[in-house]
Length: 223
Image (cartoon, rainbow, N blue to C red; front, side):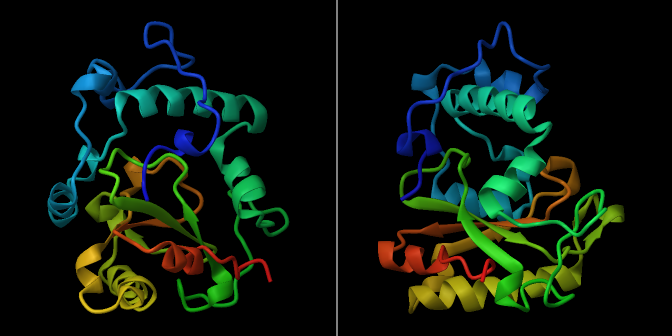
C-alpha cells in the first residue's frame, strides 16, 4: 500500500542534478549519484534495525523520488515561501493562532494525542523508499511534542512514553493479534526535520487492509 506519491498522480517534474534549483546536501548528492536501476528499497527488517538503532539518517528516498521531491520543494517554495504554509493551509487546513510566529494552533489539550481533535493522520506524499508492503503515515499534532536539545533534538522520555501509548492504542490494536509486530514509529530529530515548526510523528505499518487504513485517515480534527 506504500510507494511513491507520484504513482497516484501525474508524474511530477524532476530536477537536473547538474543544475539543481538550490544547493544539494551531501545525502542528496549521494543518492542522486546512484542509478535508478541499482537502487534497493528498504525492507521491513532493515527498517526495524534503523529505528532500533536510531540511525534515521539512513532513511532515504530513491534517486527518482529524490529528483521529483526536490523539484516539488522548489515549486512549493516559489508559491508559498516555504513548505510550512503549504502543509498547514492545503494539507491540514488548520488555522494558526493570530499573530503567532512560528505558527501555533489552538488545541483541546496541552498533552499530545490526548484529544482526537488535536491531531490528523495523513499519508506521506513523499515517503522514503520502502518495499510495497509498507505504508508511510504522518501524524500531525497541534500540541507540541517535547524534545531534548541535549540529545540532538530527540524526543524526551516522557514524549516517547506518550507516543508509544498512542501508537499501541490507535494502530497496533486495530491490526488485531500480533499487530504490534506490524507497526513502527519514529520522530525525526530536530536537525532532520523538513517541517520544523509543526510537530509530526512518522508511523510505518505493514500489510494493512484498506478498510483499516481508511479508518485511520478519517479527519476528526476539522469538526
